[in-house]
Length: 263
Image 1 (cartoon, rainbow, N blue to C red):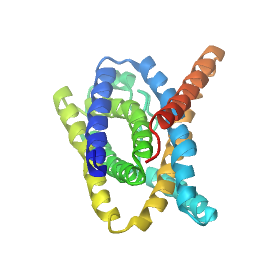
Image 2: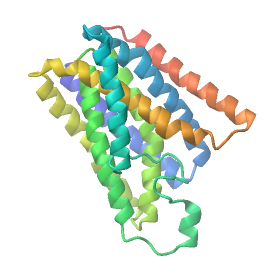
Image 3: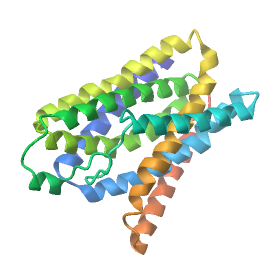
């Protein structure tokens, strides 16, 4: 299968699967499942960053400091974007970023006429477009790296998309409209991936910086957006469960990387 075919398949399949799982979770209010997915997603993101994309970026670079500088700058960039509500994540029902929850919905029967929901879709579309670029950059190095990167990215998309559903429903959208809005937003991953493939064929020198940026993205999402939510459950049994699932996420990335050898 060609590199472009891999990018298209990963973008479409990952988007549809993550959106379908998110819809099932959100519409059935399986918040306990979301916390499990968040813990696993942390491991998958950190495993992909430190075991795959970062080592590959170092391998393609003659200057390690250049790679670490891009990672550092990328983390700062994503912080700024999140402050601008462009790069936003919502993984649990009491999403601090939007101050929306089922309880607040029950207390306030007046919707915001779709303003919060539209803001979420705009931010998520931008996010998905960037994810597509990062996935394309990974596949253009080799298939193994592309598969691992795609799995890590879409692992955290499930709880995020579930949060999106909750916000859209709270904004007054019907379930059908919320699903189609999220589906159209997920197509930005495909657009970003195809555009990046066409551009990187002419500018292959950009692959290494994009891998470093992908690492920054995964590290930032795991450490800034996901891990703080786990601290809401400080109990010993919850901590053991979280650590176990994080290790499972890391192990699955390692196993996938071992199963698919480098090209």
